[in-house]
Length: 157
Image (tube, rainbow, N blue to C red):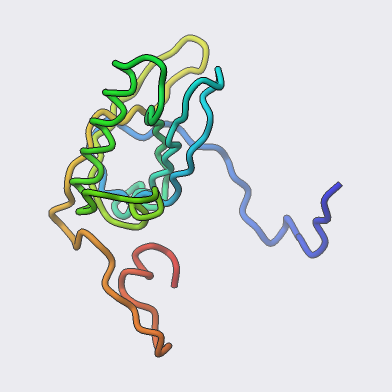
C-alpha cells in the first residue's frame, strides 16, 4: 500500500471527468513524450500528452500516439511524417531525445473519433507552427527573481 498521509479530500475540488474537446484547432505544448512499447511488443510509440495553452479549454489535455518503430513500414512512415510535422512546428529539426520537443508552443487540429468500444475520443489530425508565440521558451537565468511569462503560461510559476 502507498501512504496518503496529509491528503484531505475536503480541500481539493473533485474531478468530475472530462468530455472530449470540440473539433477544432488548439494552441498547445507537449508536456510529456515518453517512448513506450506497442501492445504487441514489436515496436515503439511516442506517447504524447499535449496541454491546451489558452482559451476556454486552457490546461485540458489531448493525447496522441506516434509510431516510432513498427514492423509495418507504412505505419512507421506515417508516424515519422507526423513527428516531422511536430519538429518543424516547434523549430527542432534534429532532436536527439523527445524531451527537446517539450514545452514549445505549436498548434494541433483535432477531430472527434467515434468508436463503439471506447465512445467519443479526440484524434489529432494535424500539427502546425504556432504563429501567436515563440517557437521556444526564452532563456531563464539562474539569478532567481520572478517567474518568466513562459513559466506562467505553462503553469510552472
